[in-house]
Length: 415
Image 1 (tube, rainbow, N blue to C red):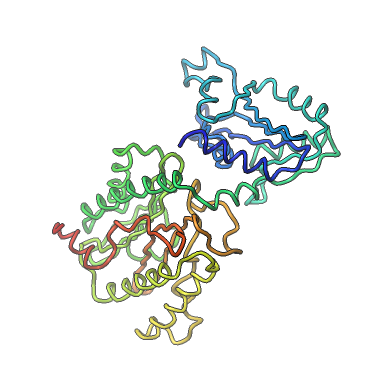
Image 2 (image 1 turned 30 degrees about the vertical axis):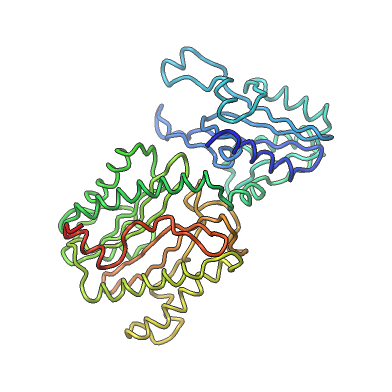
């Protein structure tokens, strides 16, 4: 992805910004783990979307006034001793090449330069990323905003998160290609697990085949913590202990994803550990699979996002009555208790208030129906990733097998 993409994203924000405004974005820092060890760093996704920079402790300031639009990146100074221990920081030329930002200053100059900008340019509005999902001040922007408010109490703060989140809901072709790359590697990992699964293995033993394929294909990070859930564990939506022992005759549900250049795949496949579905497992599995097909067939621009889940629940109400699992439509909630879709991109549960709107061309999201029958030790979910097209959708993960016959044939070694 070249720096034109990131420059275009900044231009979109400039177009939304009021005059006499500044916007401030932070790359973030790796949190402390223990002692002198940090967790692995991953960039703030809105910062990355605007810059393409994936290094910690960098600030980017965008300024707009009287037709002038300028962007400055504040980076760490080169430290030769630090470089020998943990690697060199990004140099000015690297920042320019990656992001297309020409104005480079240093972090230790931020207060002076930003203060001069606020006073001399009479900035009235400051846009900052105030994402705050957990009622905790977890982002650096909150602390800087407090300092700005203390020194410039007349300033009007505007949440840039909501604006950038709307941009991120529509993917261009370069973004879709990265998601497809993540999905292709995820596919390899899923097949490795299916090929090597045997009854009696621990869930994490089978999961290890997925991890190996990701490493072997150059993946730096998973899209999320893998779910490897056999038997009754498969009825727990976000089960992640992955330490159960698989039993002959059980299903195992894998919800997994690779990440490629910070774009994510998110795929779920459920298959029998011994390679053969029982009659009951096959019956439930095909109900889930048919529900997924109905939802995917309905996807097109203009469809209310919430309608997809309604279509699935209507299907379940009809089919679960036929097999005697429920008597009333309301009982579907006992066996299906999550939404069928979420947005996908730079985050596995990507940004954007999609639940309140309609589908638009370029949106990428999951379609993941499931049924969870705890009393029968059956947990089934089938998840694919789709992009909305001009008149429907394209299934980005269409090559990953998922019918009963395909799975049994593959696991028998008859490919």
